[in-house]
Amino acid sequence: MKIGDFDFDLPASAIAQHPATPRDAARLLDVGEDCRDRVFRDLPGLLRPGDMLVCNDTAVMPTRLFGRRDDVAVEATLIEDLGGGRWLALARPGRRLRIGQRIAFADDFAAEVAAKADDGRVTLAFDRDGPDLLAAFETYGGMPLPPYIRRPRGGDPRDRIDYQTVFAAHPGAVAAPTAGLHFTPSLLAEADRRGLGRTMVTLHVGAGTFLPVKADDIGDHVMHAERGEISAAAAEAVNAARAAGGRIVAVGTTSLRLIEAAADDDGQLRAFSGETDLFIKPGHRWKIADLLLTNFHLPRSTLFVLVCAFAGTGRMQAAYRHAIAAGYRFYSYGDCCLLRRSEAS
Image (cartoon, helix red, strand yellow):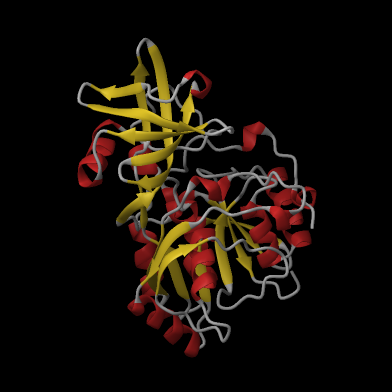
């Protein structure tokens, strides 16, 4: 299967630079046999009493750092925790950095360039670890927005709130589970009133999830592993909802990937703690998810491949054409769609 089968053209003007205000005013494309234009606050009415929302409660860490190496300004976006105070980072200007150089992010906060990769990534060894390092991120860091969201140096302070879901409880992500960005307390209250269930799982989103596939054959693409956890209580809630006839609604591709990785072949969700590198492609044997709420994704990405696997490639190509023509806003701060699982994807 070729990655070119999952390509499409998107005008730059369609890429959202800020979220809708209020969050639940974002548009929602209801994708079934046809496409229906709605708004996100319609969501509770599109579901049935007893359906179970599975939400990701990871919290994004402010891991975009601005510092100096001698007289050169440096911007580093941390993308993977390597342990021991060492982080893999995308740095600018990465080519001018040398192993052993010190980058000062504040008078009392610095890192050393410990390694460089051929693809321009660097390993930074910080001068502290653990809670002290996380506290420094909170003090000096900005939100690690994807590069298609343009911000001045130093970032926009509103992103501290905008790029965090109402579910955020466990720091560990370097990118937001963006489908969750549309929820508001009032919408959750309406969901409760209508008898919808809700449970939390945790997948700490890594930057690798959003990278384009460079291999021509998608079978040659290697997914980055991400850390996840499903409590016994969450697994029991999902299984009970299914047993009672409720549908499982994955809020975002991150929740979807985690529950599909942790489910048995008989569709029972199990408690889980560890890493998953599941790459969902057309032909995937679905175990547990019935509906998917998700934003609009990059062309030639693992996430667009995933939604095609879930709802059907032809249906998703048509849905994206509709969304572009109708002026939907794309990517992390953009609008979203509600998908039904297709058994013939």
